[in-house]
View 1: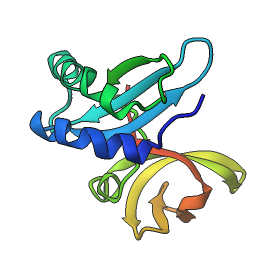
View 2: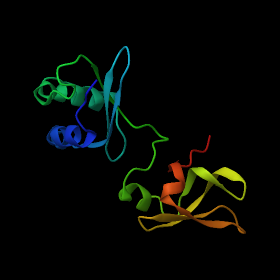
View 3: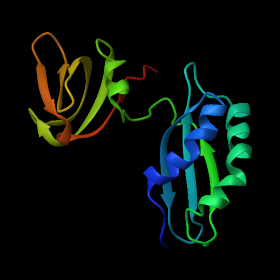
Length: 153
């Protein structure tokens, strides 16, 4: 199924997000037997079910004007990115400087592909992660599968 680009969908929906004081975090389209378009939204302080429902109602009719699937049927979902959401923007990285994060890697460092530690810096190309008193790594962003806030259970 042919689908419009995430950027085109985000640009179209941004005015609706602004009206509700939310930001579009990401857009995901799943193909298959039951295709679905999920719009992930966030706002300072978190997203509640009422806000998710309001945004869904706000975009339900207008998104037909955009026609993201060129006339093919799909299910429209609106969701929060969740507590373990991956960092996508510079803002995500910078707001977590000196905080604990989890990092999953494509290529291992010292035999491991998963670390948690303090995010010391971010420069747009790499991060510096302090794992413990003896181990601080500079990690190229291209080697990061996923980075998110550390969740202590």
